[in-house]
Image (cartoon, rainbow over the protein chains, first blue to last red):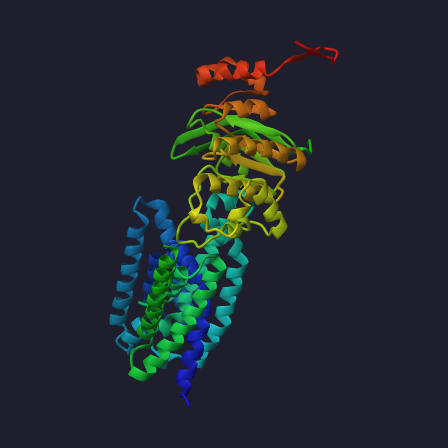
Amino acid sequence: MFDDFFIRALLAGIGVAFVTGPLGCFVVWRRLSYFGDTLAHSALLGVTLAYSFELNIALSVFLISSLIAVILIQLQKKTNLPGDALLGLLAHSSLAVGLVVIGFLTFIRFDIMGLLFGDILAVNTNDLLIIWVGGPIILITLKLIWKSLFASTVNYELAEAEGLNPDRAKAVFTILMAAIIAISIKMVGLLLITGMLIIPAAMARNISDSPQKMVFYSIIGGLLSVVLGLFSSLEFNTPSGPSIIAAALVLFILSLLNIKQSIKLKN
Amino acid sequence: MDNNILVKLNNAGFRQNGKMLVEGVSLQVEKGKIVTLIGPNGSGKSTTAKIALGIYKNIEGSVEKYTNNIGYVPQKISIDWTLPIRVNDFMLLTDKIKDDQVNEALSLTGVIHLKDKSLGNLSGGEFQRVLLARAISKKPELLVLDEPVQGVDYTGEIALYELIKKISDTLNCGILLISHDLHTVMTATDHVVCLNGHVCCSGSPIDVARNNEYKTLFGDQASQILSVYEHNHDHVHSDEGDIKKN
């Protein structure tokens, strides 16, 4: 019924949505959307290095994103600049360096649009394997640090005082962020990955009153966005990333209607 | 080592941004005992509590912690609206606690009716009661309470202090309490540490109340408390252990 490439894209997207759902909730709770953007922008550098040295793209992106996270932490310690300025500095400079490197790699034809906005045609069985092996590993790891991470999101000192390990949880979470960007870059494209993390979680926030529900709806929202987005991408021949994000936006708007209604009911 | 000791500070201090917040604090909290920190604003009470809890890493001196089963009520906590979190979720934040234990703790602090309410919609006093319920629900060995009744109405305040005293007796847990309410401190505490950037005096409530440094720190209020304290006694203990009515 559908072409193989479409089934592959669908499976890849579904796998990604299961992971972006819970991670996205933490991105919203911990106000990390700009941090996510920075890691995603640095992914372009990761891709170019992968081409230059014939590395696996996901691995190379993961390493570069992790490196950028480490540099960020070092800069935070060593300078008095505010966090968002440092994030901006790293986001734009790593994007710029990535684009400059592409300029030098004249012997390789880059699909820049595909890198920036995602390309469902580009998803191969190897990527599927990375998503469906990497995804569960990310989720299991998140489950392991969940208590410390969530407790410290509510209150750092409370978590630290009562025997949890917030610092380790935060470090592990940063690695998970780099990992999800690495496995979803082909699907959504590096400019829109943070959207995939934030928009379903934001939608879920509007209709949830507990953290578990928010994670659940965030996953559902992500799955719906992927399915709706990919079908419209196929139908209207639009790039996959923007189609998925646009679908997520539609869901978000619908969740706003829900808020309005509940406010009306209260009054 | 005395195995009743839960936490012990040896000449502990903490410096932040080049400023010494508190120094030279030695104290210990034992099972079933209430140790209270008093002192003016900025005297290092919360800092001392955080040193005891192990929140600060680069401290001077040392801290020995003999338990990890700790309940903590911090002085300041703000819940973000971005977190959809109900009282019940908050109760389970750091430990898996059985539902009837959660209910019991919420009932004891008088907020069981708020169990399914969103944390962000509580009043200051209600939230303070939830914080205390959370800290006691896990039946901790050590309770660290930093101004646990701030914003609670007057009758509630008395009831909660009675509850704290009862908890220390029934659970046999040690309590490190920070309080501004000198009257409560002087009546419910086993040991008082009076801080002003350093330990300015410590001992039993009555010893501290008689101390001159304490009197200078707290002024009129202090001597008033002393008189309250002394007038509470309608009997004296003789050396032989008899009780004589005044």
